[in-house]
Length: 312
Image (cartoon, rainbow, N blue to C red; front, side):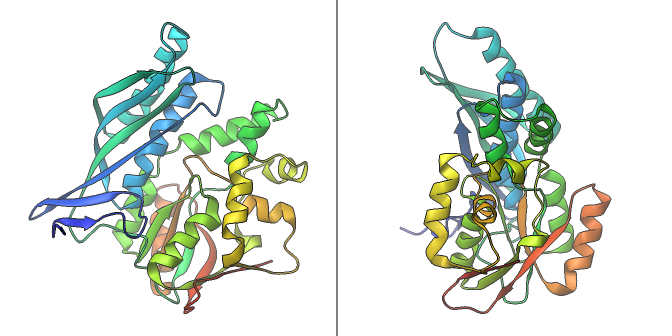
């Protein structure tokens, strides 16, 4: 049974579902949670909340309400638990999103995140399926959080490098979403667990286009390349690389380290936006006014095979 009010479902693997409930209002629905990726419980809570709300921003929506989703070992680490919840609450407050309840499960491995309800005007939602040949690909945050947080777990991350990564992961994609809605774009997705190339591949499949990505234009967090060169990367990053390999044409100059970084499993990464070329400067200006980075990392092309060409 097809419901005409379901504007975005799971067919294209989009970031969230969108359901129309009235003439000028649609709900944006998503959920995400994961184990700790940093030792600081407050930072972990803030990152998890930002990551959960990011799917709403990727759809061009605004988070409205959220429920805590929490797995925690009963009668253990209660002070840390309070800090996790405080971090999530603080980040939701920053977003103007109300946490109105939740659900907890006894589990030896902690996990935290949010089920989020957002809102968007019907017809104004941004999906991953509207990208067109000639669109510019714009990325709003640097890559490398997977490599850096893995290095922190191994005790080999410089504290300043880790702090930069935490700041990036804790930053809401709210301003980037507002900028793209102001300008008008064709498609968007946020960069999380499947890495840049994994999420780009999903956009290409949904839109029926191909892409060229220029490695030199892709921003990286300080320290990420050095750590990747030492062989530091999470298991998810290596799985991502294997998963996209058949869809990617690597230029001979692209090294194994480059491939790892382009497939690095991100947490609370930036938005990847497909914007018409004639609106690219307007998007740059809208992002600049909000203090959001604008990195033009490539463009889309007519390609029935939906491949990604990675250039130096």
